[in-house]
Length: 435
Image (cartoon, rainbow, N blue to C red):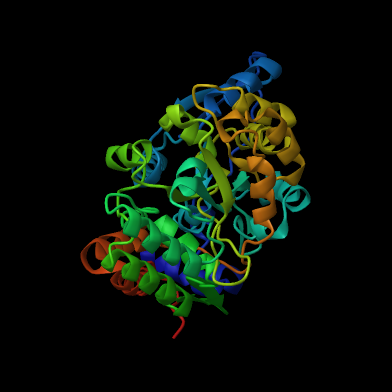
């Protein structure tokens, strides 16, 4: 479909105009489950990078006869989404793929997703909290099905906090005071690291500060990547870095991991999903870590740091079978147990479906955290996620702009660059920009 005709269609349908979710109506194939006439099961392709996914697919195949899943691991982040988008263009995309919440509007508006309203809309409405529904429903349509919630969590070394006389900070003021105290005692040690290479973390921290990077005004998008909340967060971290109170290691880089192992970094800003990776990345530190709510600005609050959903890719010939697999993965306890049974890739993802959280908590091995119930803590933090956050239709480009500018001119420069990219990207896509 030409850009001119797409713009015309967008202008003609006001309910979807601001979101730009018309691409799937222009030649998109909603697919069908064509149970093989020869009696063989339908085979669907599933691409993802998430921990425990292979074990989940194997359990589905073991317990289902009419549908079988072929699992393929792909890279995460921009590389993975590029691979998915290119596969859609080439006509060989998988039936099911993992789509992070921040990418749902962008992937839908680009025509890469099948509209799941009829196949999964009721499941989303009945099984997931409203704030989570809002991350996958746009323009009155359901585009993906939620998998996990990802409230922020603060992870810290219990032994080293005791050594340096540090209390777990409850506010960002207390965090700064603790950071100064640690540096004063040992100039080679820092309380934490704030990577300039992780715009998703900056977004979560801005979310916690009641920022709203995007909103929809009538038929137009209104970006506010550099709003008051974002500027406050950016200035705070720029100040800590300027005063050499925190490190700036790339997240989960060899340098950062080494600093954690050697006790040079005492804590880190993570999410519910971080706990599983710690078991494999920092195995020798078992029993020395604990988790707490993220420090806040005076009122209990959290942002969603990541989080994933399941979508059906455009061109799928087995959308019904794909939707059945997605429903099982997101609402069946057997799927949760299978994911957590993978000891080589332990997952601590917090199910977005509240009914599945007790199943996950019962399966997750808490020995690493000396028995602390990480799932209970994470579930409590879901209730503190600030409502009203909306992801943009060009989120990946905004992330890139924020990351590049942050590396050169700090986070304050990053949010300004992100705002410029948000504005130009919306107009470049033929969408309306609120003035």
